[in-house]
Amino acid sequence: MSSSQIYYVTTLLVYAGVDIMACLALNLQFGVSGLVNFGLIVFQAAGAYAAAVLSMPPDRANGGFQQYVLGLQLPFPLPWLGGALAGGLLAVPVGLVVLRRLRSDYQGIALLVLSVIANTVITNARPFLNGAAGLSLVPPPLAGVLDTDTVGYQWLFVSLTALACAVVFVAANRIVYSPYGRTLRAMRDRELAAAALGKNLVGLKMVMFVVGGVIAGWSGAILVG
Image (cartoon, rainbow, N blue to C red):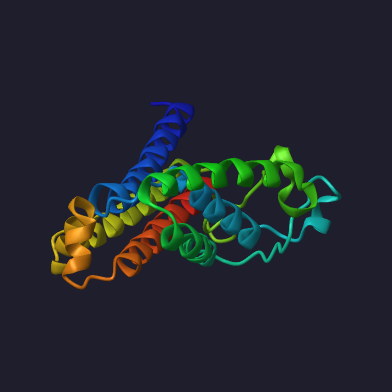
């Protein structure tokens, strides 16, 4: 294959890995815990933007081409870790508002509305994250250490993505097939019965909401790289 074909294939593989991680996050929330989350993309976007501004130089270095906050130019893997942390931190206040006060059907509606509001705010707040133009020229992982234009680097990026998928897959399986996972499935199937047995439903939902946010944020960080 030519270098352009290899780049195309590796890009598709990275996209597939990002989608797999997002699906695993959504499966933990909806498939296992019964959380209706139509706003998962918000947490993925939070991770992507966080990883971007953590890895990019200050915006004054580009002559006004882009406007954004921070610009810390941190080395890999700190931007990826920051993206995962951003997704999890965002899930905490959202979960406290949505999960404690709304029934499951209204939770889905509220999270869908959140995604629309987030899109509107980010699109119109150009000094914050460059508005509708988005962020470009985000340095890929290990950009200052390796030559990122080689075929070998493309396969390295695929390998890093596959490793992230494997970590998430193993962690998700540990949760699903543990006693904690059985409690989550009991809550999903019969909330009243689980509550009658003394289970803290809000606490269970919050934990899985934050875990899903961390995974979604991590996948967004990989996507922006």
